[in-house]
Amino acid sequence: MARKIILHIGASKTGSSAIQSFMRLNHDYFSENGFFIPDSHLRKSPKISGEHVMVLQELMTDPDKSRVIDAFDFLRHTVSDDQTILISAENLSNLGRHALLEKALEGFDVEVILYIRRQDDLLQSAWQQWHSKIESDFNGWLIKGLRQYGHWDRLINQWESVVGEENVKVRIFERSEMAGGDLLRDFLDCLGLDPMTEEPEFDVGTVNPSYSDLITPLVAGNSNIFKDANDSAFYHMVGRLTGDTYVKQQKVSLMSRQQRESTMFFYRDINQRVCKKSFNGRKQLFAPIDHSKFLYLTEEELTKRQLQFLTHLVFSLARNN
Image 1 (tube, helix red, strand yellow):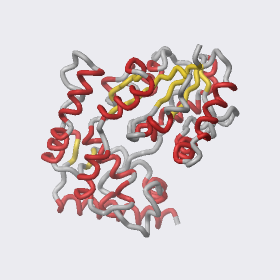
Image 2 (tube, rainbow, N blue to C red):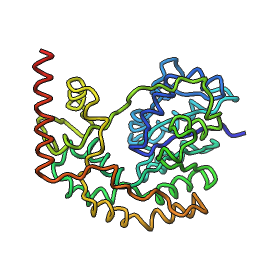
Image 3 (tube, rainbow, N blue to C red):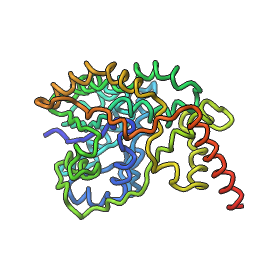
């Protein structure tokens, strides 16, 4: 029989870091329940991080295409027959990545787990985490973001072309849609484990926090603060000085109400196709936008709150020193 492998491919900004921390904390639990989690080099060792983003990025972009094939062959011949290999890498949800693994996955019985998120939220989160660090104009970037993110129909079709239509599990990244109302329990359910078990450790802490978008316009595109799109040193500093004050807040929206509605209209046909294909019988893919969950600020209100943030930052720095 073909060796079973499960790929949790994200998508980006759908709690992948929390899932990976959960895998790291509970690798003994997963092992006892028939899953093998490779280390961060796709090898067999006790040092489990739960994530495989960096090693797969390196292997998939290496001109020597045999390296990624060899890495999966190693797992095929090293992991015991009664264990399912479990890999988590949200960069596998980037369009086109399916083709880079197609040869390496030949001979495996592959299942793909994909979480999808409503695109207006996805775009604003992607802007803060990556693109605001190298670009300064959110509205200008948004046009590019619409082309890059949230094309769930294409992503699903690409992976189905590799692993088969029946082997792609699509889940909605909304608490009300998750088993037990919790992402980690929902992930267990995806793996065929009891989502209501109390055996594993569920307290993974705050992983990869998203800071209020009060802050983002102050630093967007500042190369004196960010060396690249993955540089998070500034936000780590904010966390050290202000705790979670600017994490657990009503979401400040960089989009206007009309922009949010227009964004979801742009994705309407995409979401209808995914809904029909993966959630047959469901009326719509995502819940409608609840504008009460967002803080829409005038320029004057935004400036006032930003000044409060900067004052908080300076005071915290002085007090700590």
